Length: 124
Image: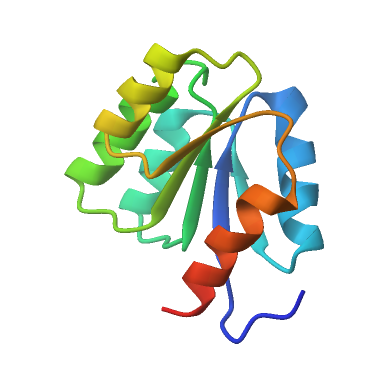
C-alpha cells in the first residue's frame, strides 16, 4: 500500500513472533523497529525515538506489555498502542486497555484489523 505520510512502528514481541509482525507491517509500507523487551521500548522512546504505532505483546520478558503501555502513556507518548497476543484472555485485554492501550487483537490477525488503523494514522 502507499501512504501519504511516512508511517513508523515499534514492535515489542516475543522473539519468535517479532519477525512475523515486522514482515506484516513492512508488507504494508510501514517502517519498523524491533525491540526485545518492554524496557528496551521505553528506553528507545525515552531517547527520542517516535513512532506512529507501537505493537506490544502483553507477554514480553521483564516488564510486561501491560506495564510497558502504562509507562509509555505516563511518559506522554501519544502513539497508537496495539496489543496482540496468541493467548487471548478477556481480562488481560481489559487490563491492557486500562493501562493506556488503544486496541487489543488476538493472533493471528490479518489486514482487516490493521489496515483501518494505518489508514487513520495516515490521515492525521
